[in-house]
Length: 430
Image (cartoon, rainbow, N blue to C red; front, side, top):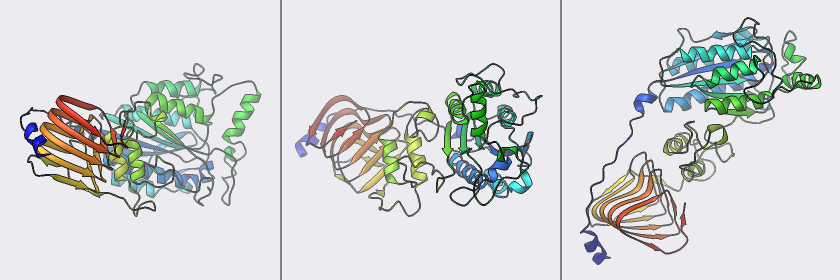
């Protein structure tokens, strides 16, 4: 091996890495939370809480998630009867004030009655459009069809007789769809089961939704010869056209969805993060790509970092096999050993310069740029490890030798100069 290191000493290349500065953009992000406060949101779920209480919790979770990337302001609205009502005095406020406002909401005092869904969504889009922010998110929680937007409202209209977007001209679905499509706002929707009212707590008798649920109204409309989209179908198209996401939450679900739980076990740990890491580069609309946590249209390190930040306290029944370690810079012939470590960074994770030897075993390396970056010469030995690079799993400028066994490599291999791979078996190159 010493002869190989001497040979590699003769190769030197300078590599410049540009690190993107997204903090400025994230600091100019704003979010509007719009919560259905109609009578049927008093329906009790399988977890013994109401839909309204569940909607509040989902809104709190989403604010916490969005705040990881930075929020310049959050506005909270509820909607019922004929209009939506601002709950955060002053409009867009800091996240802690918004959280306190949502926590204090009581359906008995802020809601009851019907569902002005169309008018409230359009008003929310107008409010966000007027805000001087680079990124804008509309978080909607509802359980019922439009049934009470005033006829004078910009988005009032009959049900569409066409189940496909852009829907029947001048229908409320058509007006909301067109409003969202042109807004540049990511719409995230939590749709609560619009089934019959059941449970210990019934909706108020003054609420027509207690007698005619959204599903029943759609069946009646279909029997009359019309073909409106179901609310789930409509919201799916809203999510697709806006770059957002629809989450359907059934009343029978014992728990609420957990953000970043991509393997569906109601818990977030290393297994979820690894599913995301091994999908780096996947491009698809967020609605069709549950691994795209930040809704930017592709799976990358920012999604991985979000998952790691949301690990369930105490784990999910199995201890994390890795211990966190800072990125490595190697510039000497003295071997660097990485064993049982997780090195995770939006930049380069292992930077080998001049001439060095790096031994990686039982470890996880995840990079938002190059997992292994070689400038000059290096010998890299990898055993029973996972290496992921969003830009490249290996970037070599000079001379390098990679010895691999029982490991996973996700990302491109970009080599310029002398490169040799000794494959000892059991490897996966993705």
